[in-house]
Length: 271
Image (cartoon, rainbow, N blue to C red; front, side):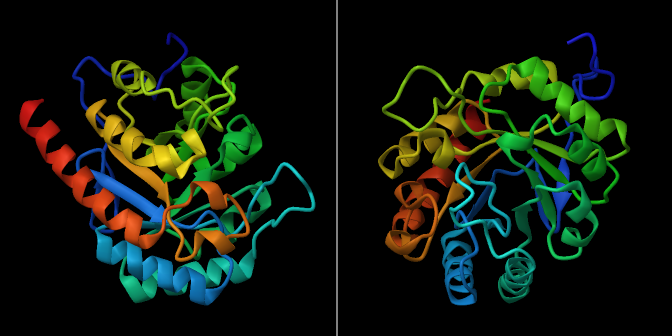
């Protein structure tokens, strides 16, 4: 990783901690949870309250949805951002959402606490530079065909613009396997820890595309050293306008959180 001037792990081995409200990503075990997309105020508020009661630390929800088909649900845009802000106000939890256009960065920052760069935009260098100029933490998802070096160089673009608060997110890569939506690469977690000081979280929802696999892969991610997780949870997944097959119900999420907390406590005691 010779090209990394800012993202590389220093000789002192000091790691970055990104603070969002009372949450310290890179120091605390952090779970971001919520629906794939913000579909209505009732759906988002009910889900946000549910995941908070279960123990989540940050609310996730997409106001903008870059989709494979131009005819699929694209998100509510500004209306969705206002709903997210209301969910944050009601629960007291920070919120994260994806930004897809450099022109939107400044006003999206008015409504959310963390900006997410999705897998499809990992190498959108204009967007990376723009979020690098913002004063909000940035969660950078790994591109579906990207190497570790390519991913970290994209983080370098954000850091080079003056924003030190970058969080990496493994969300699965494309391989020849077709049973799962993507192949969740958990070996990347210790690899990231060897190369960079930036925190890394894992998205097992997109990583597998199957709700039946989320629990096991979430626990495995924590055991592999992940600093947190981003999990899709919906108050009624059967009615979801996107990714219904990979969203947990609130009742499924609650026992998972209990297991994750126990796993995180155990790993902390043995590391």
